[in-house]
Each structure stands twice: as C-alpha cells, then as structure tokens.
Length: 234
Image (cartoon, rainbow, N blue to C red; front, top):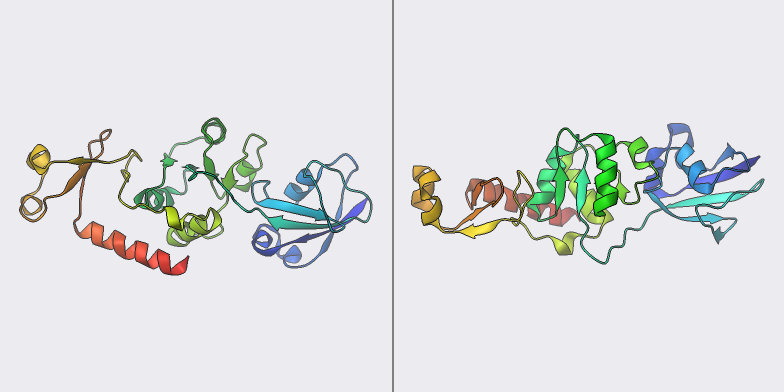
C-alpha cells in the first residue's frame, strides 16, 4: 500500500535531501500507525503536531488507507507554565545560555540516554537534544530538536519554539548548577573576593548549593549584550 506525504516548513530539515520540500510516495503496511510512519521518514513525534489526511485532521494513532494524502505540520508548543528543560551531553553551552536567561535547565556531561528519558518523563521536563532516535522513544512526550548547531542560534530557536522571550528573567540561576541565586551581603563573602572586586563592587549573589559568587562585573556586561542581541532576533 502507498500514501503521499507532504512535510511542512522546518520539518523538512529532518528529511533526506531527495524528499525535502516536495511530496513523495511512501509504502506502508496496514497495521502501521501515522505516528510510526512519520517517524520512519525521520521526524520525531515531539516535532510534529497537526496531521491532515485527505484534508481532515487525523489522530496520530490512526491507520492509513491506499492512496491517502498526508500533510504533516510542525508542533505548536503551548504551555500553561514556563517549561523546564533537560539537555543532553552535547548542549552544554545552550544550557549555560538558558540558565543565564533564568530558565530551569538540568545538564550534565555524563547523562545516559535512559536517564535523560526517565527524568524528562518523571519531572515533566522538555528534553532538548539533536539525537532524533532519542526523541523517538515512546516515553518522551516533551522534547525539541534544535536545528542549528551554533549555541546562540539554538537559544533563539528555543525561545521562539516555546514562546519564552516574555519570560526571560536574567541572572536568577547559577550558571554552574542551575539552582536559584540568593542575595548575599558583601561582608559575608569579602574574604573570597579579589582586591579589585572588593574595591569596585558592592552587590553580590551566591548559589546556596555550589557556593559560587556572582557580581555585575565585565561578564555581566557581556551577558547583557547577548540578551539584547537575542531580543533583536526573536
């Protein structure tokens, strides 16, 4: 049996070159679901939303019939609350940037795929990964595959996909371990400060978990510049 598939917009990035931006025939067995067939062409179920068959919206679990016309649209991410994230081992810089913007992001450089999937499911975290096969696991219900490889472009992608720019609250989280920062008096940390830092800065924050100290030094200015740059792109 055969059906004709058309994949819309950025979902074409998941297709081989000979199927991009065109309609193509796909052979299938009667028992195969729409979800399974769409994943066989390379699009993880976390990436597509509305699927129309012969002009009518179709449930992802439904089966096709001979000569059906299928159009697959990108997912439209809608959350009642600001989503929290877990990122795979290859997205460390993206995790840092998202934390810098105030978003809850779990990241380690030694996560195994099973742990990523489990934590995403158990804690309701959006899994960010460029590993399509990982996103195709049945247990994964919340996920996104950044299309870009540059971390700054990936940040813009995530902000757009999850409509997050209005939710940006910079400098609220520890860039090292993700925990919320707390204000701390200069006197309480003065013994840990370099001479010039003691002389020129008076406002400090500290991570209550890893004990990292933050202040509005040159790094603060660089981060503000980056946030302004991102705002112009979103």
